[in-house]
Amino acid sequence: MKKVLLLFIVLISIAYYSHAQAKIDRENEIGQDGIVVFQGEMKIRSTGRKFSFAFAKGDKVLLKCTTEKDKKLKYVCFTNIRGSKLWEQYNPASFTKEINIKEEGVYTLELTAKGMGSRLATINIIRKPGITKDFNTAWMKNNTYKGNEVKYSIDSVVGYKEPVITQDTLKVFDKYLYKNIEMVNYENQILAQMGIHNSQAKPFKLGLNPTKVPKNAKLKGYTYSLSSVMGGKKHWVIADVTVSVGAMFLSPVGAFAAHGAMALIGPQPGNEPIQYFLTDHESDLKVVREIYSPHNTGRKVTNVYKDGVSEVVGLFSGKAKNAVKGTKVHEYNEGELHFNQKGKVTNMLIYSATPPSKELMILANPDYTHAKNVKLKGSAIYYAPVYKNVKAEEKLYQLNTVPVEKTTTKYTRETTYSSIKN
Image 1: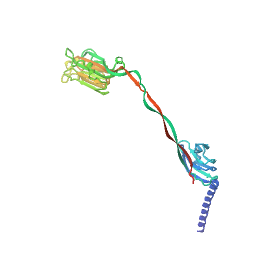
Image 2: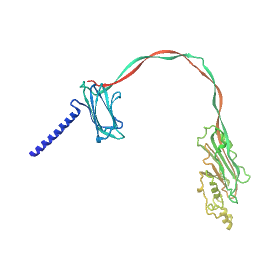
Image 3: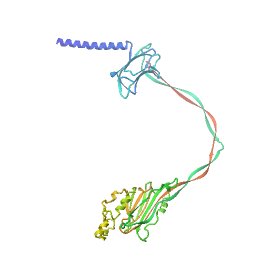
Image 4: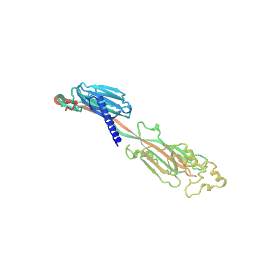
């Protein structure tokens, strides 16, 4: 028991001695007359940290700093409130600096770290008093305002002088002019599929022709019509409609939106319809001609005559039948085409605010033995503004003024920083 008690007393003595020695070391470091203004650990980043305190004339300020693991700071400086530097240092890991204060005021210690990380720094700011021992290091900002009378002059309006008259020529909008430009005009026959020829299909370009566009004109719309009748001296199903369509839309902002469209598609009586495809690929013409040829094995000379009528092949027999069917290996079909629109129509009228979605229209005769008389017309409607010059009279009235003296108060602000006196 005595041994345990003795060991406990020894341990207490060692702890007391360590604490006392640390206190002595701090007092030696700071000095008996040193007053701790700030002491602590702070994280210093690249945005910097500032410590501002008031000091009296004749004070000495001891600045001490060490960083964790001796990591270097970027910059350290000590300035007065006006920004004048009393001391600075680059790339320190630690520093001890004593600075003499020559005039009372507010002073700032600023520390900045390198890069995006932070530095843990132990900072001591110690005041060693000069003449004034008791001094409050806290500080405040003082604003004072002073008013001064200021005299100034303004112009007061008392009337008008005689006007200055000038003549101007102005360009003003008058009206829109419309023009119907023909892009395609076809009137002929497309032969039936039987026979020794390759005219079961024909291509027509519906796109705009830049050489026909009027100068400074804008597209109002595009219209095209297609009509088909059996071969012979029958009446045409529809007349020339494209020329008169422009009269239906007189205003460039009326009737249809930018992508609006109107379509009139007629019935399909008898065997009059014509087949059409809209495409951008001229190579599609060959495929269409093969599809509508009696030698295309994929078609087997069926599916083109009207429902309820026997296969044309039935009109033949033996070797003649085989000759009609042909012996080609490749079977052409619509899956090899690039069209985005197709149909069988007798009458069709399209009006759109934009050109056709595809520039090429391929017409094919779906009838096996009868030629089709076809009319295809396409035209673009353009409009252009017309302006006229008008004479305008401009009058400029200049003012008659007299100076008038006035007085006002101008305030100026003065800012000072000082210690909070005890």
